[in-house]
Image (cartoon, rainbow, N blue to C red):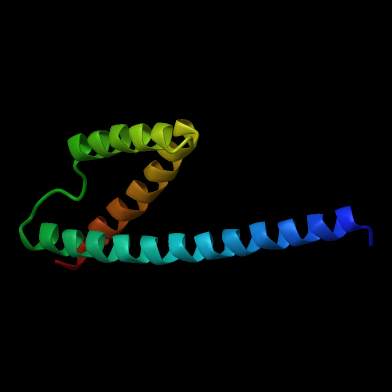
Length: 100
């Protein structure tokens, strides 16, 4: 291997280690987030509150788009990501409603 190829392999390894670390952070962060949304779903079910809150969801999407812009992340991607999470949370809330 040439020095340039060796250096490129080292840089690639470093990037991949960072990606792996960040993936772990994302998974654990989502796990923590879903613990809270599960608690919210149970609370809503116990008090006969609706599973979804469109005003809250719209505010969250706007907030996330702003955060994405500040983080130099495509806001369209951030919006798709949050919409996916919101849909999953609402599904969990419906499941709690069905158990009540």
